Image (cartoon, rainbow, N blue to C red):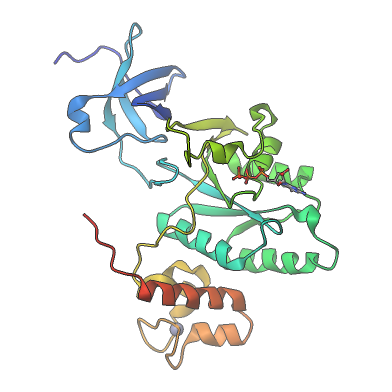
Length: 303
Ligand SMILES: Nc1nc2c(ncn2[C@@H]2O[C@H](COP(=O)(O)OP(=O)(O)OP(=O)(O)O)[C@@H](O)[C@H]2O)c(=O)[nH]1
Ligand SMILES: [Zn+2]
């Protein structure tokens, strides 16, 4: 096999029907395919991969090498994701800390930094607002970035999001109707996404072409396909659940027993902090629900 004279490095920006569009470090967009011998090694290139390609000028190129990944998601199939914007509606669909905590858990497992963006805040009455001010404060205390903007789409909130997107690869996730498309349209009006369009592109239902791409938004890249459902089963041992609740993990060093699961053990520092109000009650309740669910989960038969 003759080595092509046009070897370049770059990042896969789009995949569609076996083609991968690669943005090279010199700013050229090259359509490529994965080589046969390369595919036989069972490495499927993913959008977001850093790759080495053979990039001739006259015809389509080939991917020669995929660099090691920092992380990878199944939905959307994207590698090397820096962060996930978790669009969380305060209303419509009804707000649930349980859903939020499940999403955060999924991201902790995937080693992707969450940014919680509270949407539809304009629908809150003045009496309902303090609950979300408290929620934002509690989750920031845990160590999460939270954008809470009582006006909805104020310049301050959009600027904060723009700054977070810069130079990063992001995915957006959130329930259907959480306001993902609407939010993206505020950060990138050029995209002009029809509301509801994102889910249509989710390959749910009738769409048969599986196109995934990274869009240039606010000086960063954002996947055009939203993130995984939090109802996916977690591939996790119940006993390790506490490690993925950041404030539990910090507190656990003070539990009397090593391997404390913070349920019935005496001398549990997590429970003590729940009682003293230092750990949010709803976080503990959601932890217990997840703990029970994981304990009852059937073993996951993997290949
Ligand atoms: N009042 C209000 N309505 C909003 C806000 N954000 C979105 N909406 C509305 O909520 C509905 C759903 O918004 P979308 O942006 O389509 O939600 P999505 O998360 O992209 O939904 P899917 O594509 O189904 O996943 C639309 O009718 C929006 O106009 C908001 O901040 N305030
Ligand atoms: Zn404990």
